Image (cartoon, rainbow, N blue to C red; front, side, top):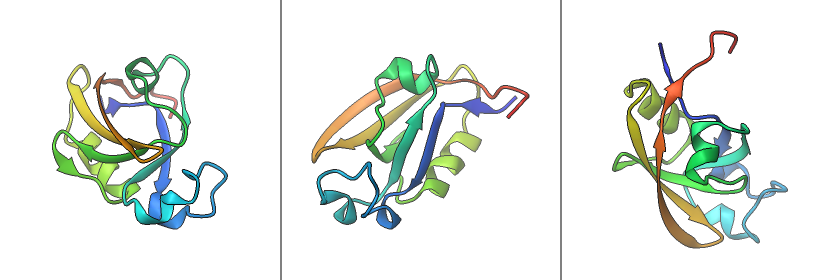
Length: 105
C-alpha cells in the first residue's frame, strides 16, 4: 500500500491570494500549503491545520506540493513522518503516524 497523510495541499508560492493565506505572509513561504485536512487522518491526529505550510518532511526540504508527494511516496504505511510546519509565521514540528492510502482514492 501507499502511505497516507490525509491532507490536500497546493504550492504555497502559488497561493499568495488564497483564502487560507497567512495574513499575506504566504507569498514569502515556500512549501506545501494545506488546503484541507481529512477528519481523523494521520495529519489531523498530528495537529496539522488548514492554512499550515509544510516546509519539510523527515528533514527533507519541501518547497512545493510535489516535494510532499515524493516524501510520501518514499514512506511506508505505519511509518512516522516528522513534518516541519509554518503556521502564521511560527515554525512547528509535528509527528504523523502514516496510515495506508484508502483503495478508493
